[in-house]
Amino acid sequence: MQKQPLIYWLKWLISVVFVVILYFRIIDLHAIHFDIDQLLAEHWGLVLLSFLLVIVNWGLEALKWQLLLRHSIPVRWFDALKYVLSGVTLGFITPGRTGEFAGRMILLPEGKRLQTIVLSMLGGMAQIIPIVIFGIIISVNGPFHVLGQTIDITLLSIALLCFVVIYFFFNRCCEWHWLRTYLLKIDVSSAILPTLQQKVVVIALAFLRFGVFVLQYALLLKAAGIAFTASLAPIGWMLLLQSFSPAVALLDLGVRGNIALWVFNAFTLMNNSVLAAVFLVWFINLCFPALVGYFFILQWKKQNSLNNVAAH
Image (cartoon, rainbow, N blue to C red; front, side, top):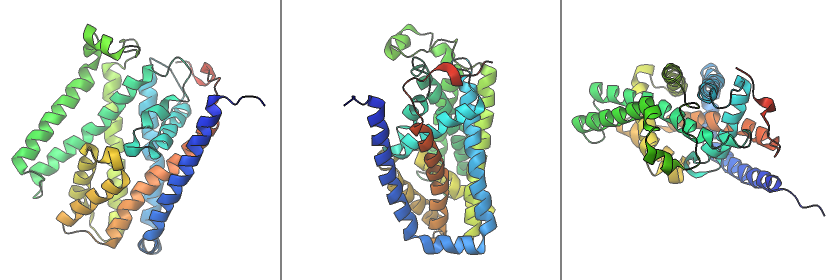
């Protein structure tokens, strides 16, 4: 019998784990189906709009990825979307979505994958900057604080400064000899890194994507009976704490749910409909894109070539 290639068994492993985890996520959904059914029955328009925004959300992320790849592997937007959704799939089946970086690379041409690690890190850093800025705004203007207003604002400002400096000056940092030695085979040459102008565009797209994400939450929380203005602060704190919590990287869904529960309780806004709304946003933003990405992974072949790579 002919020996099956490694990629064959990887596909099987991904398939089994994906189906099992998706099953348990559907079980989680079923546990609160009554409240979700109520949201659908009474506010189906808001739920539908939030669902449609999933396309905008991941479409913007694909555009970010396309821009970041421009100097390394020029690709069409749809190919960038395939890479992004493949990353969502592997992120979906790994704790804290730690497999998302690898998922974005596996469909790329062989010999080009290691180059994208740094680019993926830059994209993630760009996405967290709007969250931190929004966190500073709600810390300054809101009554709720985690460690105290002064401490919260100070820590968030330091974090923002670090992210901005690393993001915009990463090209210069890569010129340091010790960093090149540390990164070993990962290509961090300026030739493959985005220009300053491209970084500004990526940041702008990150802000747009953050706005879409907040809007998705706000629409479903509106369906759950919370006014748009009242939902902004708890949404901001929830996203901020989920982004920085080390526990999320280990347990993901359960910890994310506990963070949401704690934040909305602190704002005295928690009820079953709010819990259903928060879970539904998570479900439609990850489960459905992960399902699409799963089918892209099934098409993964070892002979990954530059055929899908478009010219400038």
